[in-house]
Amino acid sequence: MGRFRIGHAAHPDWRMAADLALAQVLAQTADPAFAADANLGILYASPAFAPELDRLVETLRERSGVQDWVGAIGHGVCAADTEYPDEPALAMMLASLPDDGYQLFSGRRRALDGDERAADGALRSHTALVHADPSTPQLQEMVADLAARTATGYLFGGLVSADAGGYSQVAGETLSGGLSGVILSAAVPLRSRVTQGCAPLAGEHVISECSSHFICALDGRPALDVLLSDLDVPERARTSRDGDEILRSLPSERLREGLFVGLSPGDADRGVGFGDYLVRNVVGIDPQNRLVAVAATPSEGDRVVFCTRDQQAARRDLIRICTELRGEIEDESLQVKGALYHSCVARGAQLFGAPGAELELIRHNLGDVPLIGFHASGEIARDRIYGYTGVLTLFV
Image (cartoon, rainbow, N blue to C red; front, side, top):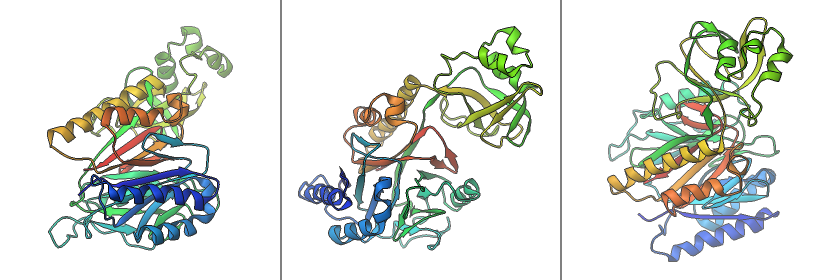
C-alpha cells in the first residue's frame, strides 16, 4: 500500500479551507507513491471551525468518498512542515487500512476488548488513537481503563480544545465529551515515541511522604529544602520561614520558563532519558511546614525531578526520538505511510522559537512523511496523560 494522502489549508471560511485541502488530497491520487483508495479519514481543525464541525465532516465525507472519519478540534493544527497556531485552519489525512483493521469508538460506540480477533486472527484491539475532552471527570482513570482493554496497553492522541463552542470530536459522528477515536488491530503496525519539552534542574529524588497535592518529604528530607538545594539557593534563604525572602532568592534566569516537577511511578520502566516523566506545574510552597504543592496527586515511592521548559533540551529530545524511529524503520526495512503528531499547546513556536520549527526538525530527521497533527491540552501516550510533550506516531 502507498503513502497516505494529506491536505491542509487556512481560510476564515471553512468551505474554502475544505476546498483547498480536498484539492490537495484528490490531486495526490495521480501520484503512484500515494494510496489511491482510502477508508479512514482523520481531521484536525482549529476552534474557529467548531461551530460548523458537523457540516465540515459531512462535506469531506461526500467529496472524498471516505465514510469513516475521526478527529478533533485542537488549539491549533499542523501538517507536513506547516503550523497553524492562531488562524482558522484544518488538516486532513486519508488513510488506507485493512477493512477489519480498525473500528471507531466513542461514548456511543463500544470499544473492542483486547482479546477479540479479526478473520485473519489478528487481535482487533491492539492499540488506539484517542481524542479526549479535558473537562471529563476521572479522565486519567478512563484513559487507563481503555489502555487496559487493548492488547498492548498503548494509546496515542491528545486532549481536545473544548471551549470554542460546538462539537469538539469526531468518531463517525460529531460529538463532545469523554473519549473517542479509533481502535486499531495488530494488522495496522505502528511505531511511536514521546518527546519531552522540559529539562531537569538537578537530580532525581524519591517521595518519602506526601498528602493530597503536597509533597512533604523527598529522600527523607523536607521537600522544600530539597527543592531549594536543587536550585542552589543561598543557605540563609534556604532555611528561611519567610516566603518572600525565599521567592526573592530563586534563580530567576534558570526559571524564566517556569518551574515544574516530573513525576514517575517508582516501579516504572525508566526508558530513555527524561521520557517517562509526567510533567506538572509546581503551584506553591509552604515555608512553615516545608512543603511543595504540585498540580498532581503524587504517591509515596514516586520518582521526582524538578525541571523547567528548555528549548535546546526539547530540540535534542525531538531529534533523539526521530533518530530512534528512523533506525527502526531502516533496520526493519519499513516504509512510513503516514504520521500523526500530538504536541502540547505550550510547544510549537512558543518553545522552538518560530512557527513550523518543530515540524522542520521532524522533517529533517525523519524525511518527507505525510504528517498531520494538532496542539493539545495534554498528550496521551501509553495509559497516561502527559504535558509539555509531543507524541509522534508512524503508520508503517
